[in-house]
Length: 118
Image (tube, rainbow, N blue to C red; front, side, top):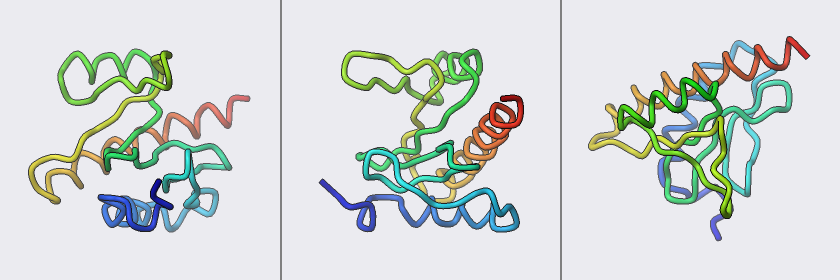
């Protein structure tokens, strides 16, 4: 199993992480031994083992993205995660970066709002 350093698309995740460099509560971390982004210790985006970006979004938004064909449900074992969706890499690095950047920012906003309301 990869240790995260040699995962496909890690460079894209690191580029997205730079967007949050002015936010001290956002750090790189791991989720299931994969690199990811945390806000206040809570993961909001990480790379799946096949190099897809997995993010946490409100359930309704996650379903909309899956229904539109832009994302896929995330299943852990036999359980489909309500608020986690995967965005496969697109045809080019630029297209992938644009899509993933938007998804990561939406996920950060969502997880940050959950954190602040609890």
